[in-house]
Length: 225
Image (cartoon, rainbow, N blue to C red; front, side, top):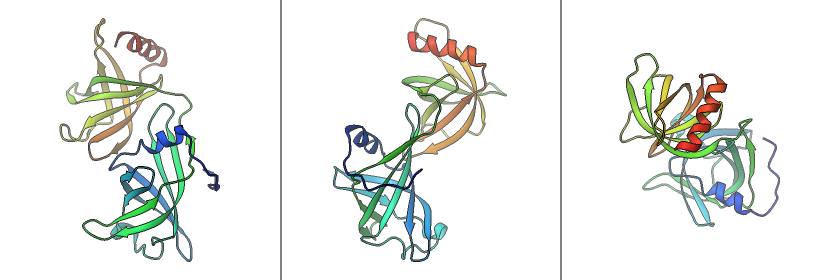
């Protein structure tokens, strides 16, 4: 992604993307020390309207001492992945306004005045909310119940509740969808990535079913469900 320019102003769409952040979502932050730049991982905690954002202080046992990079008035660049139609990396530049030590170690940063985003997928995905069963492709056993969040001819994203299901232990899966006016139908796929926040596991799935068949099933899904 290109170096962020100091362009002022947030559109309604920019604000929608920022408000899509949820507690526990992973963040990539880039900070500068006197000698170099460092990128570390942490998670989003929350925001106070359009005034400030709160993020968890990165784990120094994992990333090393950060006191020379994270301090009041120092700048940082924050990046996160927005899993929607096309999938985007969203980035913005901000400044540390306060550091809280107790009861949890967290950072307050200024609400951004601009953002940049870059698409990750070559095709858009239809936004949809459909209950599905996730089965092990080898055994046929049901591993979890979840919700189909978006879908395209090449893949989809499925969310499962963390308090109801364990993290999937198989990469090769079968997704069963139940239509209102048709028999249940299935799609085969491979788990390509897993993300998690405080409530959900979110699985990125690449279909292994033939694209022509997927296109037909997606069309049926959009009509019947």
